[in-house]
Length: 149
Image: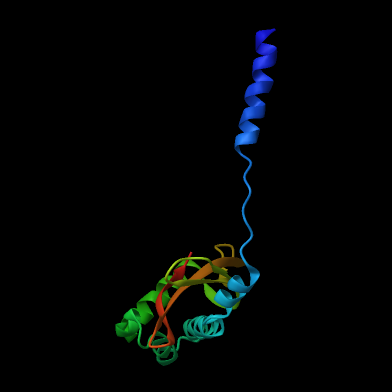
């Protein structure tokens, strides 16, 4: 009889401990944060992905200007692009997905569609996330880092 009451009591306690209330953020503060440099960040990410897709080092390098990755060479770009092609295939479409809430930097996420040929010759389509980490330098958005996830 004791076990009969003990199990429901433990189950109820466990369920009640897992409940929490998350306070709402003020909408105006959240909208203001999202608007700050949002269009500049998204434009940078779109341009960066377009440059990788088009194999255009000059456009790629222009996106990295004034950031820590500005010293990336044409050889580095070609090597990275070849690694991307061999791992995922050719970049097809991409679209901006969301911004992650992080301190000090802005993390932007895209969905990138890749296509490649399988061993049997059929086309394999795969979606991969792309993260762009941005900051602000002298009032301008700069790329601090990026990569496929």
